[in-house]
Image (cartoon, rainbow, N blue to C red; front, side):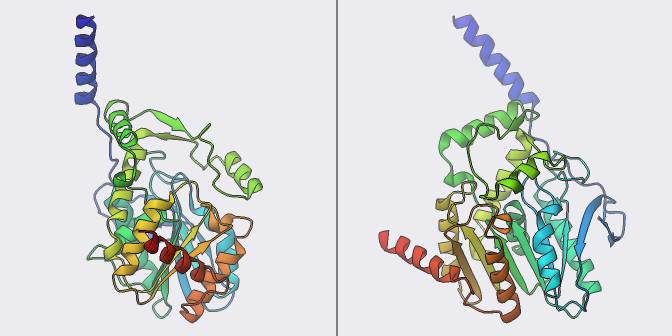
Length: 334
C-alpha cells in the first residue's frame, strides 16, 4: 500500500510539474488597428469578427458591446437593432477565443482583452468624434470593462453599462471549488468540460436558449485552463469596485443562477460607498442572467435608453428603486 501511495504521489508531482494553464497571448503589435464592415483588425493582426447596427439617421450616441463567456457578438443582435432604431450606433466583436475569433476555445489573457477593448474605443472615437460613447458588457464582457476602466491608459468614455457582470471571485467561492479548479488547471488544463447536468437556468426565454444550443459559434465544452483564466479576470474585476467611478449603470436579475448574489451584492456595496454620484444600480425581480435576451428584455432595454438619453437617476421600470430597497435591507441585516 505504501508503495502504491508513493507511485501516486510521484505521478501527481510529474503532472503538476509538467502542466500549467496556458495563456494564448497575442502576437507582436506590428500592425495599425483598423475596422472594416465586418472585422476589427487588432494591432497584432488578429481579425476579430465585428457586427454593426447603425441608425438610418446621424448617430446621437455610440455603444460598444462586449459578450459573455463562451458567447459571441451575436448576443447583441436584438438589443443592437432596438438601439439603432433609437439613433444609437452599436458595435460588438467576437473576443479572442470566442465565436469566430482566432484560437477558438483558448484564453488570451486579461491584458489581451482589455487591450482589444481600448484599441476599438480609439478607433470608434475617430469615426464618431462628437457623439457620446458608452461601453456595455454582459457577464464576462462586464468584467473586462471593469478591469479596463481601472487601467491608466484607458481612454475616457461617457458611461459604462454592466449587465450581470461576472464577479464570482475566488474569495467568494467555497474552498473545495477553488482547490479543485487549481488542481485541474495544473494537471489537466486541456480537459474540456460541458455544462450538461449542472441544472442552472440562464434565462426564461427557452426558445432563445434552444437556438443557442444549435448555434455552432457558441462554445459547448470549455477547457479547464480557460475557466481558470476567466476566474483570474473575475478576481481582478471583483477587487476593482473602488476604481469604477463616473457615469455607471449596473443591471442585475434577481433570478440570476450564473453569478451568485453574495459576490454581486458585496461588489455593489463597495462600488456605491465610493463616491456614489453618477452611479445607478437596477434589480429586476423577474430577470435572469441573460437580462438583455429574457422574455422581458424590452424592460432593461428601455431603462438603458432612458439612462443614455436623459442621464437620469430614475429608470422607467423602477428597477433602481428596487435595488435601493434590497441593498438597504442588506445593510440593516448586517
